[in-house]
Structures are given as structure tokens and as C-alpha cells.
Length: 210
Image (tube, rainbow, N blue to C red; front, side, top):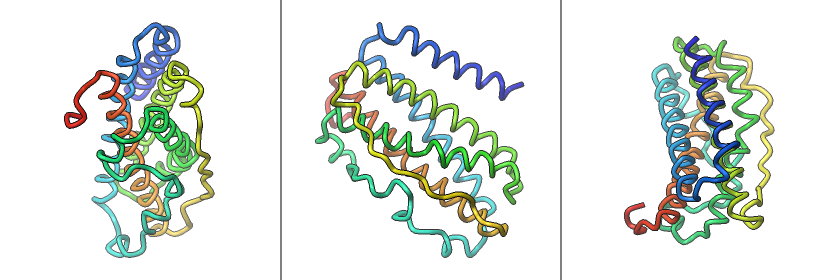
């Protein structure tokens, strides 16, 4: 029941965005997008902590490097100072590209989570579904934002996900699941950072306060 209620609230929020947000100012839209991206990053951080609590000792050694994340080919600002020098159109394009690149991986994680060899797989599965909901809600909000910002902000970089499964044995499944979640946490941090910079610009805040 709680799960259905949470999903209903998110879908109502999306409906509100679609119906009424075209009449809302850019700064308010940026604020709403920033709130959703913050929740997305918080959830991904919580999931990584859950996975850390039951991770094989060899997992850290065997887990692929961050450069193996399927989104690593996208050139993004390395820190806030660099992000502050990037145009609004490019920042929104980077955020949308990263978010869209996770549609298929999140589907895989959602299908694998219920049978993941982890004592908290029920909680993990629930949080993955929440991630999907917030990702969809944020994506819908960003679509409205780019329509307000104009065609030059609508470019999307394609980053196909080629992973089909997480492996057959328990250790491989845990390691690959954890790896994907660590990649998502890294990208959700980038999305959140980019949108916070955009929010600061929209509200004309000083750069050092962003």
C-alpha cells in the first residue's frame, strides 16, 4: 500500500508538471528539478550503503574501475568551478543525457534486485523502484525545462547500455550490481550538481553560494 501511495504521489507530481508547469517561471522549474535530483542522489547513496553492508571481501578488488561505467565516455565538468563555466544549454543537455542513459540499467537492476543474494534485497528492490519513479519524474520535468529554454538545449548524447545480465554466481551478481549502483551514484551526483548550478543562475545567486 505504501509503495502504491508513493508511486501515486510521484505520478500526480508529474501530471502537475505537465498540466501547469508551462505557466511557471524558469527559476521555480529549476528549483523543482533540483529537489528531485537531490532525492535521486540521496536514494542512490542509501542504496550503496545497503550494498556495502554485505559485500564480499574480494569485491573491492574484483569490481570494475569507474572508467568502465557505460556513461564514462561523456565529457563532463570535473568540479563545481568547471561547471560554473559551462553554458546553461550544455549543462541541461549533460544532465538529460546522463539521466536517459540509465533507463535500461535501472530496468536490469529492478529485475535482479528481488533475487539478489543479499539479506536486504527487499529494501534494495523497493529503493530501486523509487529510483525509477524519481528518474521518470525528473526526466519529465527536464523535458518541460528544455522546451522553455529553446532548441539549442535539446541535444542528447547517446550512451547505449550493453550489459544484459549480472552473471550466474552469487559473487558476480553482487559485484556487478554494486558496480552499476556505484556508477549510478556517481552520475546522480553529476546530475544534481549541474541542476544546482542551473538553479543558482536562474535565481541570480552568487556563484560562490551555489
